[in-house]
Image (cartoon, rainbow, N blue to C red; front, side, top):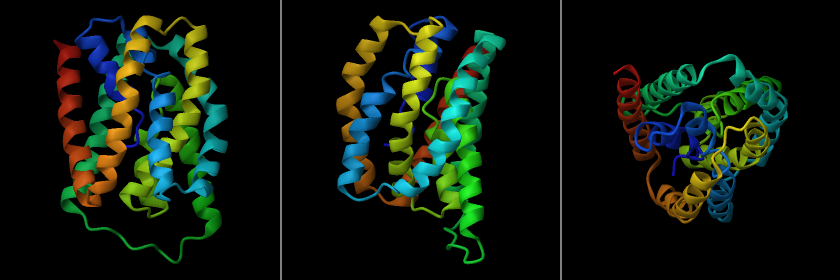
Length: 235
């Protein structure tokens, strides 16, 4: 529904509700993003909502940084990664809350050069790729705001393009975390069985909703969820 693959939301739930150790909770949902993101991508593709040109530059920047992020997890403890996950959730939620409730949509800026947009997409891709590896997320939580801000995409197109990138980025991240022993196969399979059909439903719901409603729902839900998770880490 929100073009993020779902791993960022699943990690806090696995850690706080099921009690998985931080590193297993971090990486176990990541492989689930591959089939679930592909399911959502196919739905968006049928409506012509994916911007493949922007996705190309994102992936060029993201793929090399992705591997670096995976192995950077060895430098940060599991509890530190959980706190980073919660803080990042809160930041993105606030960004979308402000945009959805307080700001009007900005028209495309004619003075923004094609080269400038390309550079911004490459930088965004590198940042999204590194975070995808470090926090075991698809990277959509970075890409969606970037697509809207730099490419002035409508919300639905940003979600669709992001989800396409998530499906590809999750592959090297999953392989790296599996090699490090951060993935619980049993929990991964259970997540996969439930996530794939509901990913299709989420994409169909997003297509039917207005852009502003999506932004408001995204921001409000993410802030609430981040606060809950951070409080659980502190207490």
